[in-house]
Length: 77
Image 1 (cartoon, rainbow, N blue to C red):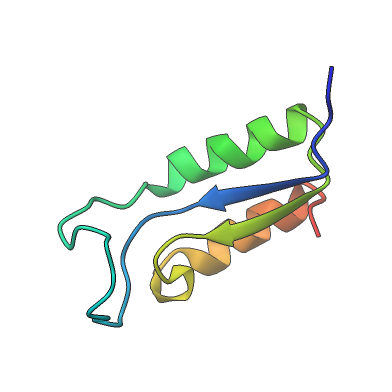
Image 2 (image 1 turned 135 degrees about the horizontal axis):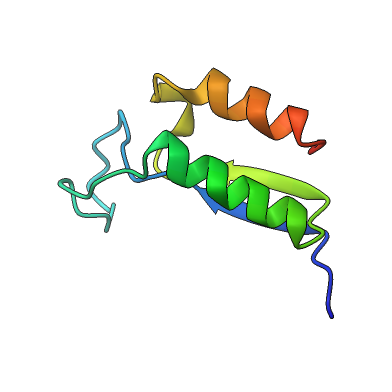
């Protein structure tokens, strides 16, 4: 079994910019908090050591602190 040291976790596509070169559809639905937490838990089970929260602009999510606290409680850096 291969253990990944790092995983990128895409939380969605929402963004507060309107870049002309962006290829992401504007009406794409973001993942909900439960889906993201399930992904983080699966990463932990799979032996991932570090995660990178990506996707659109994660910091505009209302639940970003909750997501980061959950990741920290799982032991991610």
